[in-house]
Length: 407
Ligand SMILES: [Zn+2]
Image (cartoon, rainbow, N blue to C red):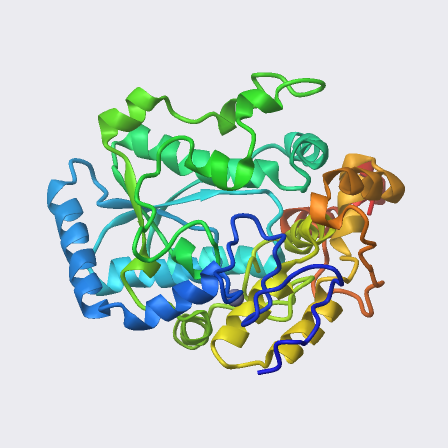
């Protein structure tokens, strides 16, 4: 392996084994220059997965026998690939009866909409979904940029808060998530899986700011109500806790994706900023989220994907860096939709992102390339596409309604 291969951003240190840069939050390099995730992937090979599976069986058995309501656990799903795999494991392998719970970002892609509905049908799941209003999503998307430096506060916050609200209201203590946090992140290891979904967990990990902290300007306390977390007392009363299946079952993204596609008809799509078609396939704004990460920290989705592929021996480190240069640095088409819903100019967007750059990158210019081809899917929420399509078949005066017809 050629460790002198220079990374995509000059002046930044990368893990000597994969493509993880020092600007990734929580990352630590050991004395040899190897990152936490690479160490975790070694650990993953030495874990007694049979013993872990026995632990999982016991946890689920316990949840099933103690379940005081109609449901054994909560299955938070987005319609992504992990959703199918989680549902398969719970329903088909362990005979659980989960309540499927979705916080909708209201940015479902056409493929994502199909995948979610397919998941519900194929596993015959009861389902609760919360969808924030379009106007609220647009306002929060705008505020999110200056507040946390990406477009997606409402999603980070909602996917944390809504399952907890359902858990406490329906008295279903166990939440079952997918991939282990140790898989890609320096903030957990297989030895210390994150178990406690206390009310601050998601705020710390992704939302950064609480619902209360987002109040202000054109956003009222009433607007932010859906994002409020249950109280400590409510969480304790229900005894809410959670597991990641990836801490108990050997997780292999590639294999699982092929398998759910072939067995259950899950569909990939093109995802901006990524060279694989399966991560965050449900959202039209995934590329926007990852592009803001690039502008802040000098890396995006391709860096995660290439790092995993290099660790698994599917790519050389140089091939990984080449893919990263091509995909992380591409201006996503979803930026057009973001500018439209927020009323920001492109200049204002880049100015805001400059403010959010991490210290190591302050004096480094991050290259941005124009996108080479149109996106495979329209970067407009699928529900709006459906509405537009039907309105066009009505009186043309109705179809001219600017709220749904402007693009
Ligand atoms: Zn590494």
